[in-house]
Length: 332
Image (tube, rainbow, N blue to C red; front, side, top):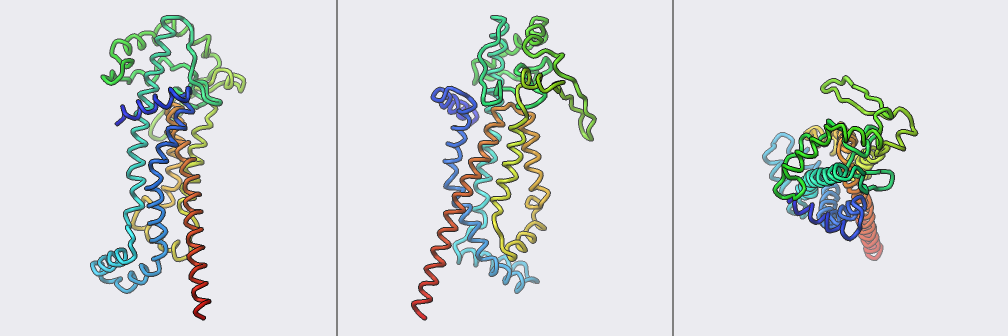
């Protein structure tokens, strides 16, 4: 499946001509495929919200008989044509796609980085990079501590050969690793992204001790840094906004029902509402910008879709309410 995504992304890139915008277009295609499931999920969630008073009545009536409560609840779902699991379908599909995209972006990033380093070794010059807006090289992180070139102790040390790639061969990987440790690379890297432009900062955190490479001035940040840490922040903000919009406006009864659900399911707790945005910032800060673009674009597109779907169903509900009111007025 990863190979299919890589081939599809490369096909889009052949049409668009820029990997950053190709990822945006590719993400739009993925979200369009998932849109019917999103609509079905939202419809199911709204249906469950409408029958909350009936569910609460059953909970009170059969509070001391859990088996009877489960039986009556399922009967109510069947009667109202509601599927309580329909809301989980988009997530069950989106999460595997997310991790497949992470793997695909990592593979493509490794390929393009190795191609770049082989070009530098053979010609002594830097090839044309895949830039996107403020990012100089989409295959490096959008971070204050990232430059357009990989560091000597970069994640390329963990790159493994792949039979599905003509670039990720054992020979090319060995050549690149040797080149990264050479004085030739250090000299060229010092010209393109001089070490004197950055400060090494070691952090002593609770569970790990990361080392950050920070520019010692704003001028060096714009001149030698690869990114401005904008994508991780946008990813976190869009993740929080998406969660907020998906929760939507709730009545007091719905809020009470949600609180009861949170007590039985920790994944719905307020802590998780903040965990995912923070996790978004972290994973986009440590991944290449190509994957960060996908993550941020997926959130933004899903927000737009969610607003459009909410508007559509709100309009349907308003028309249904108006029709009921007209009918009542005619009978009166």
